[in-house]
Image (cartoon, rainbow, N blue to C red; front, side):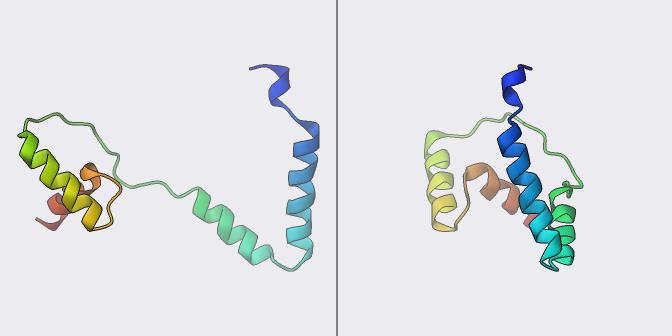
Length: 83
């Protein structure tokens, strides 16, 4: 790690923003925000490999887009959870 990664101006700005948040009686909101940052998934994801046809991949991509999923992996995970 280089010494350039530390930025005193940025650190001071963050400190001032945090201090202002606490002084503005937003302590509960700040604590709630910090609590949400530390949340982790209960179950870790694992990459798997399997074979399907090109037409099946296209159908999954189309279905994922139509249903608001980021990608076909999220769609597939959702389908498996529904089983």
